[in-house]
Image 1: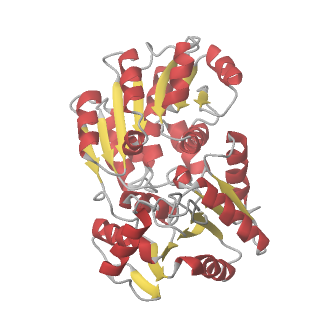
Image 2: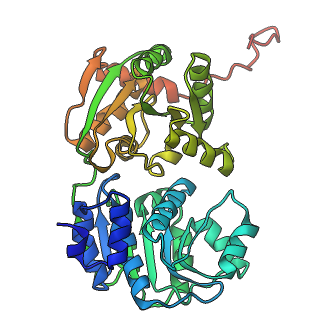
Image 3: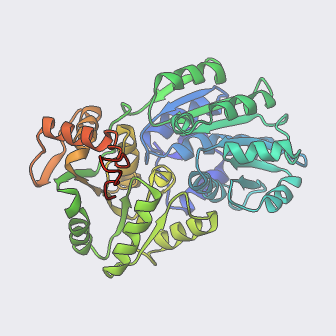
Length: 406
């Protein structure tokens, strides 16, 4: 099947062909016809399967067809995303799809100039891409009204729930017309997501192309069991074997990510980091340079797990395993994009063995061991308990009134 067969506007199909996009992915094939018929859609698909086009193309088709310019301070279509990176990625895709048309795309995210965003919204937008927090800020400043917004999309809805945006969503939704069309897309379907869908969607069509928790095709997964003290040397060795490739390295904390990035730079690698302590400008610049190949290693926290769509990423390294197994799937989904192949390499220390077992349980498969031997489960549990145990009070005084040395 090609996009012509889906009934999209010819100029929209031409914009796709100009970008080398000729055949829809399974999630697009299933979701677009229902969306074009005006149905609410609940889409479940892993990262890297083309969800942005699945909700974006039918919205753009509808806006092109009706040909009505938005009123000042309004938006005809609204896409909510959990992170700045994902919102910017969606906006970039929408601008590509609408190139050469009259449609205006605006993006509002935290960390960027609110004054410029207010000015952009003053003229109205056909498509508004936003993070929930910044959108509420602008609503409270009366910079935007949603009473003429006929299309609502919640992208990566499960992550929005994980990040505590449920209250923001409940504030935003009633501001839209009751007869709007709503689409919700997610990589997983936890119980709270089902409840959210029941409140936001009306008689939705559910399209699901993969079971939640399944890694994308084309990803070769492997694990090294390595002591924590040996992780950095091993990572340097692995990165050194593929110096020309784009590699994404995940750390658990922002301080750890920054420290690791500096270590890699000292070892002679072209590396940059993105995490919560970076300004929006720094994060945008880092992703832009990484995408352009000016830097070939990006060290990130989970802030980037669903916000990077760079087809040329060949390797994803889990330097530290995530606390939540589902985040592993989102992390490794940054490679093997759009049908390409890639490698996902995990470095598992002894006190992370429990997280590793949870990941294999979620995936319902064994990850290939290419280094070291699996830690003994009981010993790993002891290590975890020791790590989380309450530290002794070293300030109590012994006999004689002399404190113990710190």
